[in-house]
Length: 440
Image 1 (tube, helix red, strand yellow):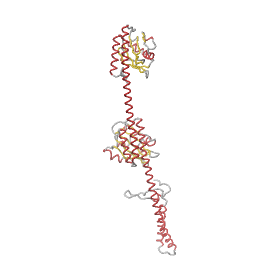
Image 2 (cartoon, one colour):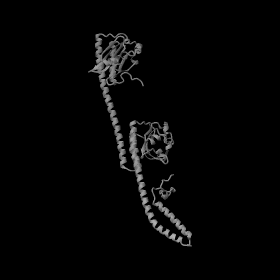
Image 3 (cartoon, helix red, strand yellow):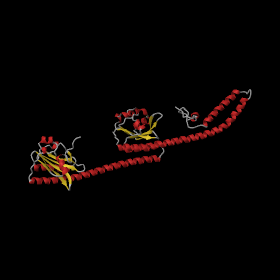
Image 4 (cartoon, one colour):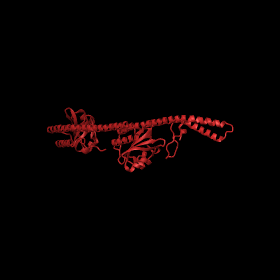
């Protein structure tokens, strides 16, 4: 980092005025070097405001704490200082620089207005500085002039600092308002609909507007198949829409999955093509410059992901932005939790309906079945009964019906038969009535 030139902390008008004062002082006193230092009472430091003459371009120090060097001593004590041989005075620093420029004597004075230290005037010469009364009077006038310029510069800098702080506060407030609006908007979406896909699409839209992402997509995680698949999106480019709809990302290929899926943290990159975490078939198929993934908790584990995409622009996320995205993810997670509850309730209602129907059917079947079995048994018990093999088949079929009826009264869950895709779903009574869930 380069060192700022003298006076860089001032507006151009103040800088020019201080340079004129330094030039006039040099002409009046004929010293080798004139340096005007500005003081910062808050930090108790001095910085070069203007420098003219021998060694001005190579000053060894452009900032000084109060108390360091002869200039710092003047600032700390607020009294003038005149030294005819600086090399014999321990208060001076930069001896090698002074020797290289032949600056052996010094005269300095504090620049004070209304009891406030505004800076220090430093005069350096090769021979002892001996000023006439007229010269001293002229120097005093230039000291007042320099102090006035520094005071005005201080006021301008203070006004500028306040404006910058106000602008920064406004920017921070605007950002906070946008953040709160986004959170309120997401909360409104959660309260307005129970449609998971539609709500996720609206949340994707809000995230796009909030972050400036080119595209936002929502994915659900299939733990059984160990893959991620898309379910909703916002601003999906036409060129990738169809491919993205069918895309699947195996969890084993997601090298960032531990932080995202296990720890529930936002994962992002402003240079995804060169980020090893995103080296997989999905990113090879849909390359983009920057991205962010927001986890969606569906109970105790992550069940979904919101994916923010910047196709060509690098996009870094601040700590505040990451915290906001995490908060939005926590809000949006309610959708998945509600969807799970609704799904569980729908399954429970379906189970109740099936068990009521099955119990009613079993009761209606049992009565005539008992009559059929009874009469068939009577026929089977007669000596020399004709067509015994037919009666045995009737009894076997009745036993099979009895077994089916038994399953109908013991249904604890709904398991479908593995049928062809073109056939409607069909309940598997045996698996639906097993005590332990089937293993697949």
